[in-house]
View (tube, one colour):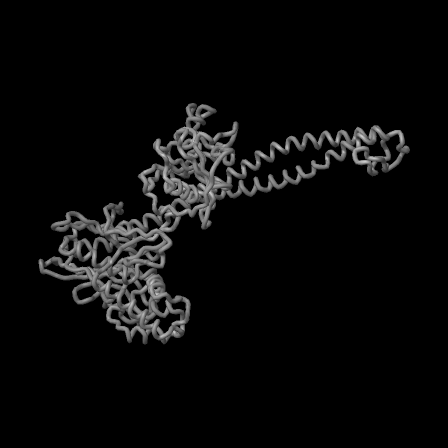
Length: 594
């Protein structure tokens, strides 16, 4: 939901509860637009408050983490230390439902007189700012100075009066009633969701979409086209939402997709994401920290894997072209038997061929049909026959070589496709290490080992590979029935799970006909319930290239029935007797064991 007015209201309530009467013991400025306060409360001990006025990612939350600060503090940080270095937070509040948090701070000036100042955090995207004001509302300083050439609405400079610019003339949603809501929203000639968030302060597009969803109305339909009864229904839902905000009935939560990537966070339940996983948290600070940590982790993994994705994609395209060329050449060798037949027939009927003839028509004694054989007029019939035999032998050798090469190229293509799948699954840098190692071992990228004797040569390579392979561990899930299920994150782990970790009677699962993880369901010595089979199959479906499908076919068999062919690539296995089931790739009921 981003940091809209509702989320800010939740943050403000939490900060007021935890920071009221807390004293500021330390102020740091880790970044140009970021402040970190260390506070000491009478009952809660030491707390840290991070606030950022970043244009791309404004935020504020309580955190346990300490951040590195520059040796020389910036001017704004020094000014705050001078004024409120040992100040006490009297109150934290939010004006209306604006994306603004005000900290009223009590402190003593240089003469020992008690003063009250205000620190304001404006969470307004590229207009975000941290502003420090005196008791009468005069700006003492700000983390960003805004001049008339930047904003024609308000200057933010020392000595200027502070005020909240009312540029969009939106109404306060906390004072709305049913009649005013209908008048504000349904008279606008725009989509319904836009009409809601453009009418009231502090409402984001996500909040407006959620209201439309709760009212079973299309958010894209024109606001003026909504029926009167539906207008009243939507107005009542809006007032109920605002009542929750006023009473502090918040439910901080994070919504994640099937890849466990953060999709949205909110201070109120988002029922429109019922098909995704919604995790509730006791604190909005925890939500913000978790959400941004998750998002940063996902972004970091994508950035880290960008080179590997490019290498894999390039290798895949090159290998696919090579396979296409090999298939074409293989098809050309299919006419080899024709040349063998020409040679045989010329040996049989060669004495009938006139000298200098460019072709001859003879009877094919295999089919009793006439066949015309092209000839080289410069050669005798015997020489033409030998030419066709030579051509046949060459095509036969080409066919035999290409048959093996095509199998190898097809195996390479399948391996690269599996690597692409596992790159999508990677959720940690250690997972990327193993994928990179496989690319190196398979010759898709050049391995760079140390120049020391220990790390050079075959022995050093084996040692390096071993070191890399133990970095990442398979996923470990536990079903509601109490069965342990293990999921490989890459081809190395697939081999390790299937042929070194699993016992003969353990159950082995894999999505049919596509790259994916080997999944091992540990056997307990008693009959396995159907629900455990289904849970393991869901994991195999989820951790496969077909996870985006509504239904995935999954093969399963006892592990002892799974074999690895000689010289097969990592992760490649065969099995000849198996069962199958079609199942949804939904693993929400499974518990991930750390």
